[in-house]
Image (cartoon, rainbow, N blue to C red; front, side, top):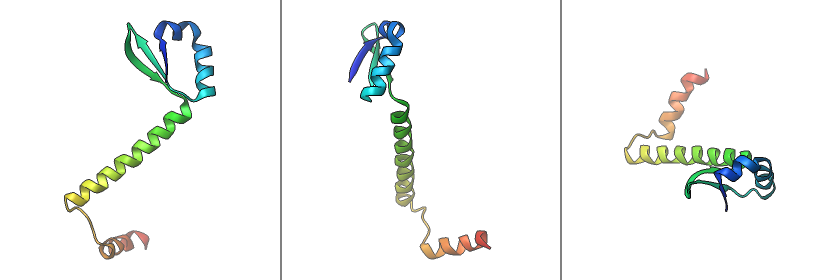
Amino acid sequence: MKVELVTSLKRHATKILADLHESKEAVLITEHGQPSAYLVDVQDYEFMQRRLALLEGLSRGERAILEDRTTSHSKAKERMQKWLK
């Protein structure tokens, strides 16, 4: 992962962005020697957001199973018939 100072980002944003798009490697932006933000490609960010949404859905499903908040297939099919008429 590349690391850039915030002042470098201010002065060389176009080059840093061009390198980012070419390499697809995230850039860690630092301020006063401390991590401040990550700069990532738009496609990579959107991919991560979709993956996170899937993981959150799986987590909700697992929680529902643990809390016994599930429905059998036949009951679900019966309920859906009301919507499908």
